[in-house]
Structure formats: C-alpha cells, structure tokens
Picture 1 (cartoon, rainbow, N blue to C red):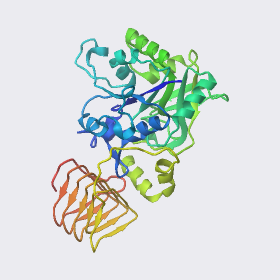
Picture 2 (picture 1 turned 180 degrees about the vertical axis):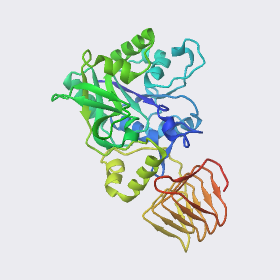
Picture 3 (picture 1 turned 135 degrees about the horizontal axis):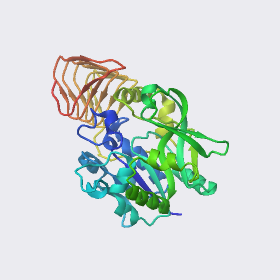
Picture 4 (picture 1 turned 45 degrees about the vertical axis):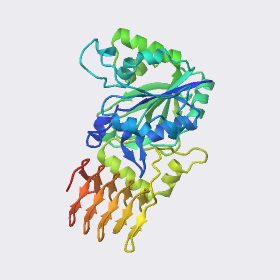
Length: 377
C-alpha cells in the first residue's frame, strides 16, 4: 500500500499576517528551533510516507532554503522524496492574473502533478498543524472502514473568533460525517473540529480535481465535502493527542507560553518514542552562558550567547542577550541581538532584529509587542 502526501504551505497566511509578510506560513518558526512545516513533514515521514508534494503560493524562498533537498527528513531520494510545486497562475483562473486562495484552487493549479501520481492513497494536510500524529494508523483505519474520505478531527473548545476560521463536523454512531459547519460566525464552545488532514484514494482525488475544473468549484469544504455527504462515505478519525493550531498572533504567542510551562505538552510533541520531529540541522556551537547569566523556565536553542537574564522565554538559534539585560515572557527569533541593559517583556522579535542598549519594550500576554524582520530599535 503506497501513500503520497500533499502539504498546503500558504492557506492560512492571513492568520499571521505579521509573520508571513516575508515568508510562507509553512516556514514560520515555532518551538525554539523548528518551522511549522516540520511537524506535518515529520508526521508523514514517521508514517512511512516518502513521496511528498509541497504546494507553494508566494514568499516561499525561506521555505525552499529550509527544506533544501529534504535530506534532514530522509527525503533526498532517487524515487519519491520531496517535490516543491510552484503556483501555476492560469491553471484554474482561465488566464486571469490571480493566484489560488483555497485548497481546491491549489489542487487545480497543480493538476498535472496530481495526474502523474502513482501512489494508491494520498494524505492531504495543512502545514500549520502542531501535533505528533500517526498517519499510518489513520490510513489503515481508512482502508479498514471502507470510507471514501477520512478526515482527522478532535473535540476542542473554541472561542467565537477562532471558530470562524475552522470547520466542524457532526458524526453518527458509526463515525460517518452527516453534517458540517464551515467557518461559522456565531459558534463558540465544544465541537468536533476538522484538523485539515484527510486521506483518500489518489484516483478519487484526481476525479474530484477534474470535476472541480469542469464546474468551477473553488472550496473543498463547501463544494466537495458538504455537497457530497450522502454520496461519498466520509468518516471522521478522532485524534486524542495534543493538538494546537495558529489562528492569530495572540494564539501563536499563547501556544509558546504553554509549551514552556507544560512538560506534558513537550512530551506529547517532541518525546514520542520512535516519532521524532525533524528539522534542518545547522551544526551550531553550544549556547554560551556568561558568568552573570541567569536562565529559568525557558527553551534555548544552540548557538546563543547569554550574558543577562532570561525568564520564561524562547530563544531561537544565534540569539545574543547582552549584559544586565532582562528577557521575560518573550520569543526571540533567530539571530536577534540585544544590547546591554535592555528590558523585554511580552515581546516577539523576528529574525535579525537589533535592540540597542538601554531599550525598554513591553507588550501584554493578550497583545505581544512585535518587531519585524531586520529592524533596529
């Protein structure tokens, strides 16, 4: 049983418009040394999927730099491996100068690659799903159940604001999806939410894309799933493990603060036996701690230099914290430089930010202070 994977790298860029201004959602940093796509890629590789397509949109230079040949995920192969699919403007827009906005439009734009797919099954997934997921078990469940499409779901509690960006399902006692609520405007509370991961036969995907091109369908949820709940056997595969999504800058910050505080979450993501999360290896030197450095309740990547105080924060690779500087409840991206006598509280700095001596910057847990890439403050 051969399985291919398709990853959408840009579907939710608007959720993190500040962080995706110069990069795709797939390459947004997360968890000290990873990018968001690392979780989906690792889940596929750990489940035996070695033929993976990454559909891009724009601003994907950093994504290509991160993925390279795929060797860090054991995907630098003669057969299969990782394939980056650039956007093809005229594939679905009839020559109009437009790029895709939805998953179905993305699939239509790479229809030629899909038609050449030889694998029996295909797993489709967004790039911003933070979890350690056994896709092999999901595919086996899909085959055993005889379903046409199987969607990964999880029972979660969502605010009204976050619910507007998700799709919810209602199942019968056999696990078949009987109803869907897509991007509701007035829903809040507990619900079975789609994790935007699904499995189906490649032949069915090809038929769906061909039909969508012929009829001008644009939304996978509304035009394919909701309209065919009685025609296709669409089942839910309930996921019991830890799951986090990134629907806003505030949620991105909150996910990091929760990651620091909970060893249970760290174990559920990064310490699952035989299911590591892979990322690009940079072979940096170990972090240097000065004589007066103080670090507590923080996650520190390699290659850092810490001369001051770091509390309940996340430091990515190559960060320098100056003498007598205090970093608290903050997230500092790669190669951030802070001078001496700096105070940071609830701050997110993008890559290559320079904070000069004596600066005092503070945000709030519900509204962190963000400094964009390459800025000097």
